Length: 72
Image (cartoon, rainbow, N blue to C red):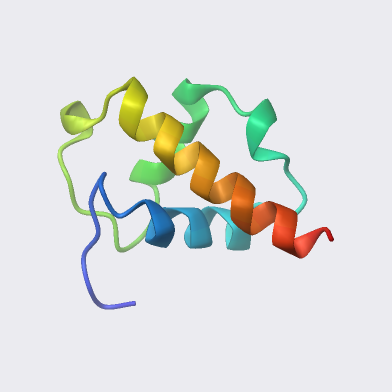
């Protein structure tokens, strides 16, 4: 993925996280870890301070949907 992504690109972030942590239930992840792991995504390019609880919740829910599809 050459395109840079940011905090509002929840689907792109979710796909990257489910690829990195395929067996981890996203609902068990603390927001501090979710924030850090999002920043570690290679194509992520946004200010760490631009995140908030609402954005992290959206990422977590998108990740959970992707994770559920893997574990059906």
